[in-house]
Amino acid sequence: MFNSYLASFSDQIRTANIYRHFKGGYYIVHSVAKTEETGEEVVVYQSLETGQIWTRPVSSFNERVPADKENPTGQFHRFERVVEFENQLHLISTENLVAELEKRNDNPFAGVMSVTDNSKVWRTDYLVGKYVDYFIDSENTVRDFEIETSHFTFKDALKRLEKLGRSDLTIVKKVFMDVDF
Image 1: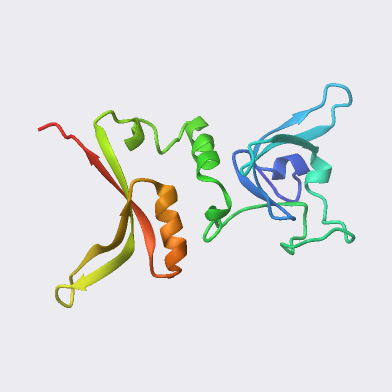
Image 2: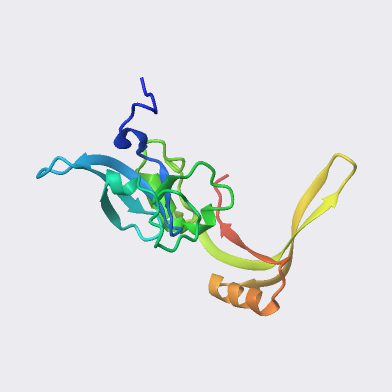
């Protein structure tokens, strides 16, 4: 049974968990290993932003942030486990997050085909506009999307959104595809 007051540093490090470095980067811990030469325990971890794989001695992974280092996160330790992801997922690229999830046994995307992989898609538009809620009665609302402009590429839609400079606008993707019936 795990007793935190008896556990070694390596027992406290959880694999397949996300950790934040005191400078703000996010990493997933893959394993705790031992070096062949010295038997020293090291943490094997990967940057969620770049995909780079790193190792660091367990003692260094868990050490307090040195006083002479810039510490923008205000953390006490070099790496701290992320418990709450609210308002933090935007810091990780979608590509790296999906790539990491695809490696997992509990992959939420397993068996799901991307729209871009479907040969029945014959056009994709990128719409600049805003969401609008229409109140039907006191208990029911209908959400719609009011289109300002339509574009064939995401890049063009993004340029238009930036030019308009309105915080109430966003971009949505509209896909045209044949369906079997």
